[in-house]
Length: 152
DNA sequence: GCCAACGTTGGC
DNA sequence: GCCAACGTTGGC
Image (tube, rainbow, N blue to C red):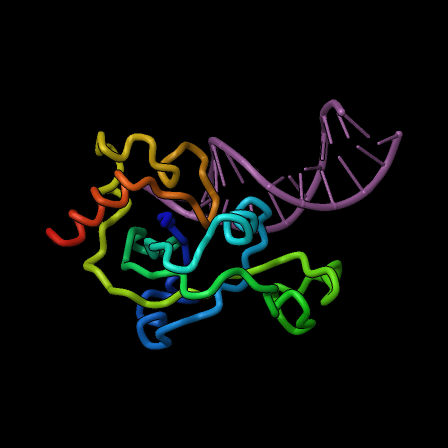
């Protein structure tokens, strides 16, 4: 089993939306590296930190789980979608998405609280210039942050 | 294949 | 709104 961190803008889709929906198709990822993580590496049962980005208080807002393997992202075929990709065909889809399942909401661990922690020195999220919306999390990082969530 | 121009992300 | 960093595009 692997661990991940997925960013989402809460004004678009927050941990509360996921809590309400129980599961959701993770669509709209249009970055090859992030796509490849979903397509090649994310497995059902993998655990996910749900991160709120581009908002007043960026940080880890809860936990989700991969409940479905990657399948073609429907929005790439939808001309009315902002994620429409004219180069994608049903025979040759370009973008995929996994299904996510709500696990728990946490009291937010702000980005500022993650920064500067020696245990998280190598965390991909915190790497200089990182913009990837899906990043791997090591087991050690997962356990460390999970303890912070419980303590909060 | 190079690289300049442009677009996007995302914290501050 | 600013800006650093990165990804993508397209001319050559």
